[in-house]
Amino acid sequence: MKSILTDFFGKNAQTLKDKKLFLLDMDGTIYNENKLFDGTLKFLDDITKIGAKYVFVTNNSSKSVDDYVKKVVNLGIKADKSNFFTSTMATTMVIKKEFGDKLIYAQGTNSFIEELKSSGLNVTTNYDKNAVAIVLGYDTELTFEKLNTTSKMLSTTNASYYATHPDFVCPCEYGFVPDLGSMVIGLEKATQKTPIFIGKPMPTMLETAVSKNGVTKSQAVMIGDRLMTDIMAGLNAKIHTVCVLSGEATLLDIQNYPNKPDFVFESISKIDLL
Image 1: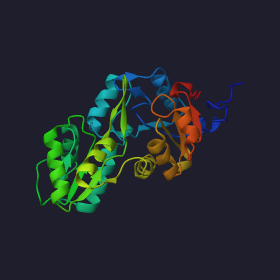
Image 2: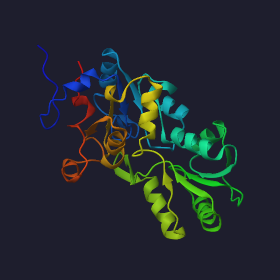
Image 3: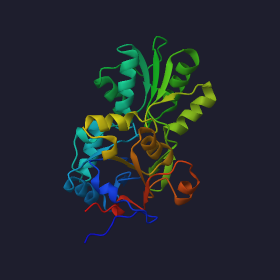
């Protein structure tokens, strides 16, 4: 007889074996920068073996979907565009709905800017008082010139202000580096402006992924390493949640956080679906 799946605290997690859609964070959950965590490939293979699907729902807007596909394929993961839903994709949906083809100003990586443009948005990266919206992505190519232009846009126009996600830090091989949420704080100190955040913990990304993949919320689970984004997104979308301890969240964080995940595992390698 097969053993019952239990989480870090010994809680019965057998229900995970019945899920049809696994919504997975990336940084801190399946890899750290360019290194896959032990057990990632087996876990993804096991998802397929039980007749389910995995979709990566990442807040990191520094790469386009095409870039993410290339990255994970090079790491040995079987994936195509249907396996991704990013904060950039969610942001594009919101901006298109709100502003159509009106001019927007955007700050982010070249990859981020190109994805916005390829989606049909009318984008400039230069100061333009006619822009109706300001959109920020996680900019790993940040320069003072970009900060200066964005500060000027925020200070001298009444454009609506959006950011793809609120994460304060991004995991790296030695710990963490500042993420978009930290950059936004710097801009707030300079301009007194705060953005509307679009990615996790807002439920849009998860709800859209569930709908696109033809499953119910009860058949989906969100797995991530961050309480304020991954876990809260799952809770806001009314989807089961798993917090892994391979990234940002610690046991003390979980103990002190008022909104608990349904299950806690040391890493995804400990989630035995077979």
